[in-house]
Image (cartoon, rainbow, N blue to C red):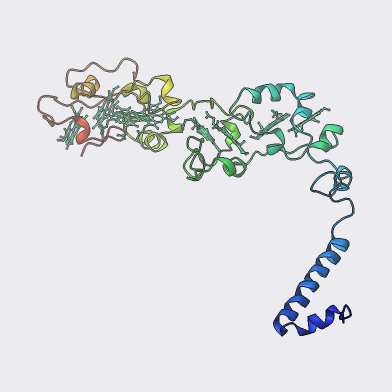
Amino acid sequence: MARPFAPWRGFAAMPQQVRRLAVVIVLLVAAYFTARHFLVPRTFGEKGHYRAAAVDSIAVLPIHYAGREACAMCHPAEVAKKAGSFHRGVSCEACHGPEAAHTTDPIGHKPTAPRDRAFCVRCHAYDPARPTGFPQIDPVLHNPVRNCFTCHNPHDPTPPRPPETCAACHGEIARTKAVSPHAQLACTECHTADPRHAQAPRQFLPSKPASREFCGRCHASDAPPPAHLPDARPPKVDLATHGPRYVCWQCHYPHYPEAR
Ligand code: HEC
Ligand code: HEC
Ligand code: HEC
Ligand code: HEC
Ligand code: HEC
Ligand code: HEC
Ligand code: HEC
Ligand code: HEC
């Protein structure tokens, strides 16, 4: 006699741990379909692996960034300058902030310009994690106090306007000399500097005095008074007997010579 179809009897006959496992699996499958029904958005999958309605809900968000092309219409000079510069890869709005409102109402919404040092330092402060060759500076030592844009045009940061005075980079020497007996001597009296030294200092090093006779031009007992410094009265020494065998700057610091 065939037994009536009654799967629960077989189920009841199974070992206890298998029955428990089966219950857990059934609950998990049910939870999965319930979650899928309530949690997955209706339009998911219509256009790919995302919610198709997201396209519309994103499209209604207000636009903050105008994009780089937008600035060209009204600021062709800045755009052209930046395009040929080292900042060609840095978008206008990376520095000026999101400016969509400004493009539709230029006078009513004025962009800000990041003029403080802290802004440039975000990208240029020395950090060994940056790519090799990326131009970096030590913000504490690199021309402190002054704002970066006074030397570097932000739309074309290179070549920076080279400093006009030696003191810009050799401040300590210049300040020392200014209060010394050599105050009236220009740096170029003793150093011949190629103008390119101010742009690539270590590639074009200035000359330095090489011999005792150099100082002797003004200080030797038979030296004529320096014609270009009519008020100067350099004290005289006898080169043959005064500190012979040594160059003068072994005893006299040339930027602050003392007779002691
Ligand atoms: C429809 C024309 C127009 C567009 C597009 C435009 N600007 Fe302007 N922008 C102006 C005008 C006009 C001024 C001058 C406002 C003034 O000086 O009163 C100005 C001034 C500026 C200033 C100087 C603000 C100041 O205080 O001196 C900056 C910076 C600037 N724009 C950046 C941008 C950027 C970045 C973009 C692209 C996202 C852009 N502009 C797009 C018209 C425009
Ligand atoms: C690296 C940051 C940076 C980028 C990139 C940049 N700017 Fe500027 N911009 C500045 C700073 C800083 C000033 C203020 C300069 C000053 O006061 O001399 C300024 C000033 C301006 C001014 C005011 C006029 C002036 O020259 O003083 C305008 C207009 C302007 N920027 C437009 C633009 C446009 C358009 C672009 C994209 C082509 C752009 N900027 C990209 C930093 C930047
Ligand atoms: C968003 C990051 C960013 C900001 C902010 C930024 N820069 Fe730059 N800067 C760059 C990049 C990128 C380069 C090009 C690096 C390269 O070519 O390897 C560069 C190059 C330079 C150079 C090197 C030019 C040369 O001769 O090699 C100078 C100088 C410079 N920037 C100055 C400034 C100044 C000043 C400011 C502030 C007004 C500023 N930067 C803000 C990213 C930035
Ligand atoms: C007093 C003028 C002056 C000021 C202010 C100044 N710089 Fe410079 N900067 C120069 C000169 C000149 C050079 C090139 C000579 C050198 O290497 O010192 C230079 C070089 C650089 C370089 C290296 C370029 C390269 O090719 O490696 C970067 C980056 C730079 N400056 C960024 C800045 C930043 C950022 C600021 C503000 C925090 C700033 N500078 C302030 C004059 C200045
Ligand atoms: C842009 C910054 C800068 C300016 C401007 C500058 N120098 Fe220099 N100078 C340097 C640097 C950097 C060195 C190299 C220092 C080092 O190697 O230790 C240097 C080195 C020197 C040296 C030493 C050369 C050697 O063989 O040791 C002399 C001398 C000198 N400069 C004189 C001058 C004179 C004179 C001027 C003005 C006409 C001047 N410098 C302007 C940055 C500058
Ligand atoms: C009276 C001549 C004289 C004058 C003026 C002079 N120097 Fe010197 N300078 C020297 C001599 C000599 C040396 C070499 C010192 C040594 O080798 O120890 C030197 C060395 C240097 C050095 C190399 C670093 C060092 O301290 O040894 C620098 C940088 C320098 N001078 C910059 C300047 C600057 C900038 C000025 C103007 C503010 C200036 N010098 C004015 C004679 C002079
Ligand atoms: C262009 C002329 C000139 C040259 C070159 C020159 N000096 Fe002088 N020096 C002077 C003058 C001018 C004074 C005196 C200024 C005063 O006291 O009125 C002076 C003063 C001195 C004094 C005396 C300081 C004191 O306390 O009275 C010493 C030491 C001296 N120089 C050393 C040197 C040395 C070393 C060199 C070479 C590196 C040198 N000078 C190159 C013009 C020169
Ligand atoms: C061995 C160290 C030494 C050397 C090298 C030396 N001096 Fe002197 N110099 C002195 C001393 C110490 C004094 C102060 C005492 C004196 O007048 O002899 C002095 C004084 C001077 C004075 C002041 C003289 C006065 O009447 O006020 C001048 C100028 C001077 N030196 C220039 C030079 C020149 C130029 C050279 C190189 C040719 C040189 N010195 C090399 C040690 C030296």
